Amino acid sequence: MDSFSKSTSGFDHWVRNHYQHVDENIEIADLRSSGEGRALRATGDIKKDTVLFRLARDHIINVRTAALGKLKLSNIEVLESLNQWEALILCLGYEMLLGEESQWSSYLQVLPEKFNSLMFWSDDELAMLKPSNVLTRIGRDQAERMHARLVPDMCVRLGSQKLADFLTLEKFHMVASIIMSYSFDVDDPEDDDVDEEEEEVNEFLAEEHDGLKFDGYLKSMVPLADTLNSNTNLVNANLSYENDVLVMTATKDIKKGEQIFNIYGELPNSEILRKYGYVEVPASKYDFAELSLSVIKQTFVGKYLSQFDNEVRESLFDKVVAFVGESEYLEETLEDQEGGIVLDAYEVFNDADVLPELVLLIQILTTVYESFESDAKWAKKLTKSRSELDAFVNRCILKSFQLLEKTMITKNCVINLHQCVQQRIAEYGEAKNYEIPETAGELSRSQMAAIVLKCEIVCLQTVLQKFPAKLEQIDDSKLLKNVLKRKSDSEEKKSKKRKA
Ligand SMILES: C[S@@+](CC[C@H](N)C(=O)[O-])C[C@H]1O[C@@H](n2cnc3c(N)ncnc32)[C@H](O)[C@@H]1O
Image (cartoon, rainbow, N blue to C red):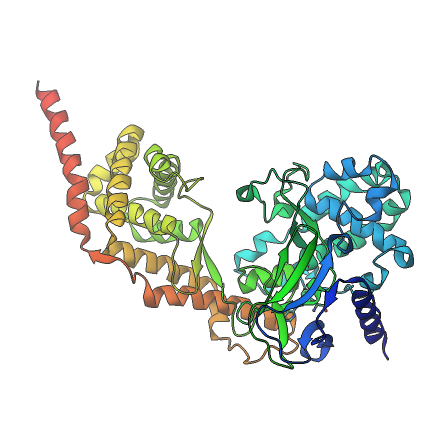
């Protein structure tokens, strides 16, 4: 028996001795040959709603159960003043330091030491993922800053100089990565002042320091629940949290020999690779690409008002977008769209579902720019008067919003959105020619990078084929007439004033 199998068998033994229930038709399978590590598999037919296993809360690792919390009287309070990531990194690190003496020693044996998540890719390897926006979310610097905050001071405060010595930066990255790919956000029955909306899913990147209290959940390690691999299309099990116990249940009939899958989140392949170090083939059910504001800027600045020099065109775009971003009308009308409609990047999903914020922005920009094109002299004048420009953009916002509310869109808006998407596809270069293999197997990092890029391109191409399925297209002239009518009204008023 190799050491991998020995660890599996030790862990299996521990689970069956400690858990309240483990179904007889499940096993921990060795799927190393297909690059999937350990996984849960059915050894007999399992009916939907069968409880696969049930465990008491004291078998999971978090601030309430871990040895570090009990090392000193004040430790729980100190740990609760940290954020979820910091607290669990220190708790799990301490269990690893305890090794054989840890209550979870058999479980610690089956945690990985090697990772494919993006934190561990070299700069050259990461370059293979250009131009995916996932490259902006790796978080290596945040992890290093977190390490500097916690080690050694916090470890010493918690009473363990040994933990400070143990948690080198390399170890810290390893523990953080285990938590990234293995932990669960488990409902906290002791914290009933829960505001689900406020749950911060990616607080590791946000670096918030609010402390654990009132988050409503505790980031925890849940042995065996984390042995399940994930598949967005084949998910057939779900972990639920009851007062005293955690229960893994089959959500579908599962046949003998089939793998039991969880779902780690509604994530696209780029995020699955970033956090978990693998990709789904041929695609994740939740794939999306991102269209950044800079691509939209390039498209509009490159297309309109060619008689102006580039600097004027760029500054005009920035002014218009800044005004849209601060629009009081939009703030009041779109109450539930906190942060407005101007975003750094817009997600574009694999079913051509385009964010309404993006459609509205492009409709506003199209209306503004088509109006400018219709009278370049007037446009030039407008660029010099902030208040007149703002008033005009405001009208375009209003009319564009009303149009989309009636499920209509102008033809040039559709063309412009398609051109933004084409501009984005062009940034991917040759990646569009890549053919995704039919089965995953063991994939190299360059293959996984190519699959991520191809999945993003497919989302963008789908928009070109399908958008706008649900909106009626009208001629731009109808909207422009409406917007520009007011312009001529106000010019007439001005000239009357002048005459008087
Ligand atoms: C929560 S663990 C699941 C158990 C893991 N396979 C193991 O051997 O410990 C998450 C890790 O499992 C692997 N994994 C999960 N789902 C996978 C899948 N569908 N294909 C390949 N690897 C997967 C990835 O390495 C991921 O980081």
